[in-house]
Amino acid sequence: MVKLMIRKLVLAVVTALVSLAAYTADVVSDGKHTLSANEIRYLIASSPATVKEQLMDDEAARYEFLQNILQKRNLADAALAVPPESDEYFEAFYASANALVNVARRRIAASLPIPDLEALAEERYRVEQERYARVPEYREVSHILLLCEDAECDADALRTQIQDLRDKLLAGDSFEEAARSLSDDIASARRGGRLSGGIYAGSDKVDERFLEAVFALDNVGDLSPIVRTQFGLHLIRLETIEASFLRSFEEVREIIEQQLRAEYVGLATEEALKSYLPSEEMTINGPLFDQILNEIR
Image (cartoon, rainbow, N blue to C red; front, top):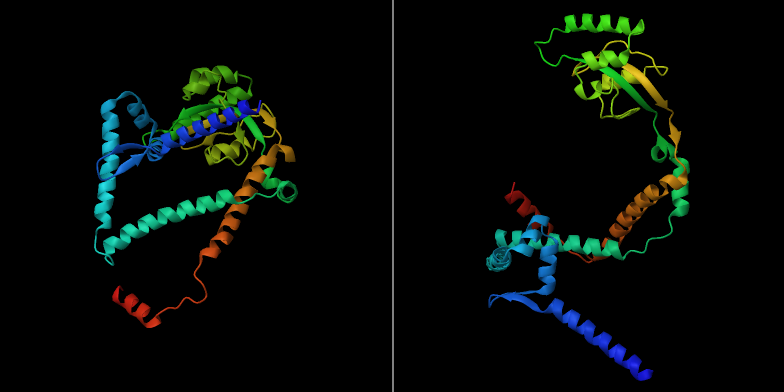
């Protein structure tokens, strides 16, 4: 039994070493630079899906992909060969430094232990229910549209036409039949004027005047006055009303905790970054700094 366990352990270690070697082995070399399996794995994973597909099926695409990477390496070497203390040198240095700073920030953020946020989430829910839990009133409507979008449109004639139609509808004519035969909104006309989706109070996805008219109607079945929007003239009929309500804490808990985690990580990361600030012993050559500022004005 002990021998069997030792064999299994040795086999596991050997397998792990083989796997590690596969990732650290070189995939390509041009005599000057080598690209390891880990590096190639990162570059392929961060490439667009179209590039990945080409690499799977096209040998020439693979060669060009690797050739371009080595070319970038050679160009980077050339850039680093510029004279120290030159603008080009500092441009290359700080481009690299900024990328490394972003990596450091992500690593710090990923290493932070996240505390239990449930109690804080409950408190935020209690204090800010309107922000997190309020679902606005929702209405469904039908409409009839007579298009009038440009300067050549005879708005007065259309207004007379749609007013006559409104009078007939109020007198009992079928809204659905009128929508099917007269509305210029072809999609909703097929449904007797019914819009495919409802409208939430305060929505910014609907023409403001249309929205205002929808929520000015009091009861299901009510017909609006003539409404002018950027598209033309409308008659709107209210079909359904779903009252505004508050979602429970459990329904919005994950949303609140996700935001709290992001806030905590942001603040904690900034606090951790303070340990990388220079010491209080930092000295500044004030006159020289002022001279530089004056030179580059």
